[in-house]
Image (cartoon, rainbow, N blue to C red; front, side):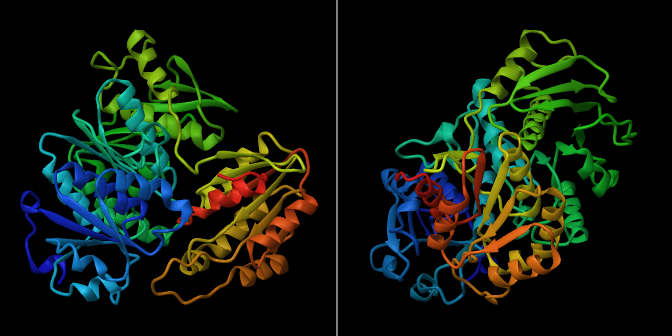
Length: 495
C-alpha cells in the first residue's frame, strides 16, 4: 500500500517503522520522529557492521527499536506507517511481512515532519556539491548566533554528535529548520521551503538540461528567498526567481544585471590555504572581510561564502541587519561561521602511514567533488594518490567519461588515480560497468596513471610499495562508511 492510497495525518501517528534505518537520510528523520513522541523502529541490512555503530548506537540510546531486515519486526511491533527510501526493493522482507501497512517515501515523511513544525522558518540546502557541508555549517553558525535551529542533514555534523544523537539531526526550539534537499532522486520536489540555498549544478545523476528543469521547478516552490551561486542564477534564468528575495555569491567580480531585484551580493576576492577574503556589493568593490577557514580547500571558501550569504539573507547578525561596515555585529557573524567543527568524512585526516604518507578520508563521489579533493590535496603534497570507490554501477556509468576528462586536466604527472570495486548496497543493478573496465578504458584513452584493484588488500600492498613522505593518499567514496575504517587501517591503527 503506497502513500497515494491514504491521507497521512502526522499528529495521529503513534508508531512508525523505517526500512533501511541506517541510511543517513532515514536515520535523521527517525530521530526527529522520536522527538515528536512517536514510537520508532527500524531495520537495516548492515545493522551489525562496525562502521555504522556511530548511527545505530545513537538510535538505540534514543529508544529506537532495531531489527534485522527479515520481516521479524512485525511480530513485535505493528506500525501505523512504513518509511522507505529509493534504495529499497519492492520484494524487501519487511514489505512482504506487512503488505497492508501504508508506505511513504523518506522525502514525503520529511515533508510531513516539516509541515508539522508550525512556526518554523524552513531553509532547504541543495545542489550537486557541498550541500551536506553547508547544511551543517549553516546550522552551526545559526547555533553559534544563539538561534537554536533544528537540522536534518546528509552527514554527521561533528559538533552535534552525542551518545543519543548521530549528528545528522539536531533538535532545537528556535525559529529555523535547516534541512538538506536531495536532488539525486528528485525528492527535493516534495518540499516548499521558506528559503533555499542552491549551491551549484554539476555532473551527478542527470544530464545538465534535466537538472536545470528540476531546479527551476524547485525554485518556483520556494516561498520567500534564496541564496544561489552565479552559475545557478545564469543557468536557471531569472524567471524562476522573480517571486523571491535573492542573494548571490560568486568567486569573481562580475556585473550581471539581476532583473529580479537582487540586492545582496557576496564575492570571494581571494583564497589561500586556510583563509579567504569576501566583499559585499554588486561588483565586489566594497570593504573586504577576511575569514579563517576551519578546513582546507577552495571549495571550503565557497561553502563559507554561501553560509555568510545565507546569514545575510536571513538577517542573522545578533542585532538585526548586516551592514557594509564591519562592526561588532558583522564581526560576530563571521566568528560564528569560523567556529565550524566540520562533518564526518569530509576531509578527515586519518593519520600517516608507515612510509610517511598522509591519509585522508572523504565522501567525494562525483566529478566535481573528486577534483576538489585532489586540488585541496595539492596544497600540501608533492604527489596525490587518489583512491575512489564508486557508489553504484549507474553513477559510475554516468560519470565515467566526464571523470576521465577532469582527471586528465587536473592530475599532475606525478599523481596516481586508483579505483576499488563498485560498492553494491542491494537493489536493482546492471552490475556494469565494473571499475576494472572503466580503468582499462582510462589507461587506453588517457595519459595519466590509472589503476584498479580487485580488493582492499591489493590496494594496501600497492600503497605499501609506492607511498612515501610528501604523498597524500585520498580515500573517497559515498554510502559505504567502512571507507573510514579503510583509511584508518592504512595508517596502521584501528578504531
